[in-house]
Image (cartoon, rainbow over all chains, first blue to last red):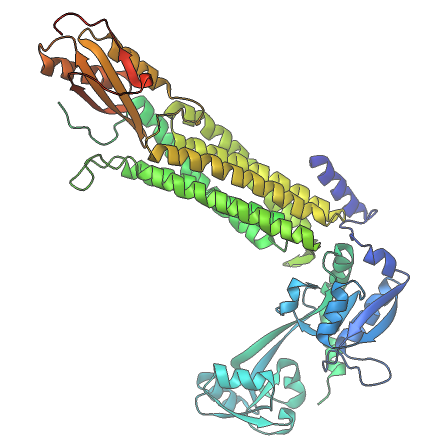
Length: 234
Length: 331
């Protein structure tokens, strides 16, 4: 065991041989070849409508592909279809605005989060924000209609949800993602409704590929938030 | 005659006992650190899960030992006329059954994973600003779960022989299982690193078999004690030497025509019952009390001794009978 450990350490320090390795050799196949990426609409993380896919995760994956000299073939589908194809090793990566705490972690390897965002209750000015921080009871708060945030707001707080089409366009207290605050000129309250750890999914057990992608993502948390600022527009 | 009291130890044994109690506290503190280390590096490795379960279960023997070290001194009372010696057997059985169940669970769970062809993912982690493959952290945690356990196990094995203590011996064996388990898990993690996805599940099955095997062995030992099996050595290998010694001593008494000697374990001490057919009816009370005192002299474990004179012994198994001097006329 000690010899193997030593060998492993030498490998890692010299970066000469691959460790950990992929049981099915994904990294070797994809490097200098084709990377099959499944995408599912999830604005602003993945956008599929246009002729060319866009969004934060698409941009990150394009940059990652350049580092390993891979060409990307995009495959559109529903999240569950894509994950099933990933499980059967027909796809190499799935990008669908996934959260690290999703149920998929039983059938797919979810990467470290490349970005963590929060869903917060915000107000147009400091005074309102302070008041809301101390008590939400009976306050009317705008929230996107029929969204998970709307259900969280009514279940977890005693505020009165005011369901609207686009919370960015209404005045007064509102539920928004924390990255929208500056652009909309809003002040966050202490009330956080949710937290999202954004990640990508790769096939279970392809550890060399997983580690390569995670190293790339961990080095680029700042880059990811910059891309988000460009990709997200009110 | 003195009513059999709680467990009393000679000073030399008490010294060892104090040492063991300190060692057991150290073990518990150490195990808590090992359990924490493995918990944070658990990932989705089956073998790591096995090592973690094993470490948690290893807490049972030292805790059982420490509790019994307190309870065993309690004097007999109205509700417990035999004292509290056997409290430790309950803990021993519970720990053994836990081992058996956990081992079986690990075998089934890992075998299912193997059949499904589950490839365990091990990715990167970020510790403060340091990025590292989780596999390396797993190996570090496993080394911490193996090396001290090995040393503690060796120390306890020696002390268990000095104390003739079964719980302590089981604890030493548990520490041995710990470091074996950790080694198997290391092989599994290293195997995953080399792209052998099945290495992890196979290592976990090996670990599971080892844990379940221990469980069966200790369950049998515990059940044998509870149904009053004959006293066995601290390592559960063979009859305890005191059994033969007591029989020899009883056979040597002049007044003993024939005797049946029954011995069983009461936790750390032994209970001795002797039915004696006397050569004649003279001074029976003195003879009985002298015999009880003589047996108690043999070893500190022999504290609960009852000798009772009878006219004859019918239907006793040959193995418990001693003496058998030729019947003298008029006896």
